Amino acid sequence: MSRSAHPAGPRHADVLPEGHYSPPPADLNALDEKVWARTVQRGADGVVTVGGIRVTALAEEFGTPAYFLDEEDFRARCRAWAHAFGKDADVFYAGKAFLSKAVVKWLKEEGLNLDVCSGGELSTALAAGMPAERIAFHGNNKSADEITRAIGAGVGRIVLDSFQEIARVAHTARELGVVQPVQIRVTVGVEAHTHEFIATAHEDQKFGIAVGDGSAAEAVRRALGHDSLELLGLHSHIGSQIFDMAGFEVSAKRVVRLLAAVRDEHGVELPEIDLGGGLGIAYTSGDDPSEPQDIAKSLHEIVTRECESAGLRVPRISVEPGRAIVGPTAFTLYEVGTIKPLEGLRTYVSVDGGMSDNIRTALYDAEYSIALVSRTSDAEPVLVRVVGKHCESGDIVVKDAFLPADLAPGDLLAVPATGAYCRSMASNYNHALRPPVVAVRDGAARVIVRRETEEDLLRLDLG
Ligand SMILES: Cc1ncc(COP(=O)(O)O)c(C=O)c1O
Ligand SMILES: N[C@@H](CCCC[NH3+])C(=O)O
Image (cartoon, helix red, strand yellow):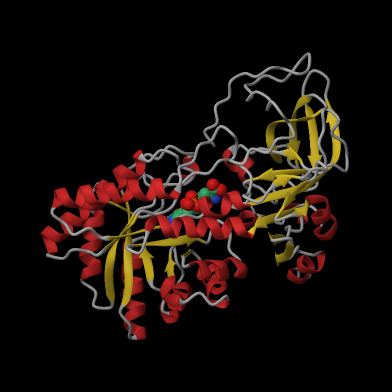
């Protein structure tokens, strides 16, 4: 799913499994800064550090598997996005990528807004003190309770996803005696270049209201017809892990065209458009993500050009990056448990986590990098498959990875770029205990989400 190229690489055994592999890196001990969090480096003793702390010390104190999040990197990325978009735009961090109270606090301090898509995310945001007016509430099937809580809390916007929801939100707002600011999520008919499960702007899927058949124009008519709704604008999210700006360009054009049609029909110029999230990150050295300032420049140019040609005032733009902020800031640390070389087939390296802490490989065929981080090695690279400990053959952490031939049980491996959609999609499959998230900064490590315990599991089981 990442778009790394896979030229057939040199082979380091007499027989290797069928397939195409990226060539082994020239130096297995090197850490490509593209995929690792900002403060990660290999110390003189060969042990990798983050925020100045050695991973061996982290493993000892917090156990494995565990996610280690570079707080300095997270904050720097928030600032880069806020700065790139400037004061005439709004950046909403997409909490689905990873949300905790500490994250909300950092967002608040760094001036970002927050996109939530469930009652649970809303509660976390409010519990950590995010001002409600800086929260956007999403979801294609918000419950009556979620709608009531969001309106009651005073969220800055609810993004309406269906005709039923326009009526429901309008009704609840009226009952609560408020005028609720809303946007309408439209599907613009773009085929985003990403895995089909995470593309969201083609019309044949569950999100949003289609532009192409006139439904979105009808949704605007209905929303404008409710006194209890204040229609702020239109929202379009085309998918996730996208590198090509062309999809955003088409999306922006179609949204602006609809704004012009709304002006022509209703005499109203809606003041906002939200172009969603979806910007890709580097999972492997072959991925080349854009920088926030280039993305901001490109989106501003497209919207300005389209508005000028339609004779519209340029609306306030907002975006909702999730992965692009938190994804690169964390890695998962695992301990090697068993190694099974299969002569003529492949070598399986089993670690102490797996699909319960990272479902993305199984779900999207996602590619990841991996490195031996508790020491260096001069042994030759061997192509291996790193797998988890679950009762499932598809329990793969990294499908094809080069690791040193002297890899042994007890070694620590780290998978970078696991900040997004790993802890937030973690499960208790096989009654696995979901790993902790530990924030590291300036030589200090702090658990921000603790490891689950067997007591946690048993507490839910009422016998
Ligand atoms: C509406 C909406 N906004 C923002 C995002 C965040 O996407 P990403 O983490 O790819 O930036 C998503 C998820 O794809 C989404 O559905
Ligand atoms: N969970 C997906 C992305 C979907 C984002 C939510 N709309 C991923 O891991 O890539």
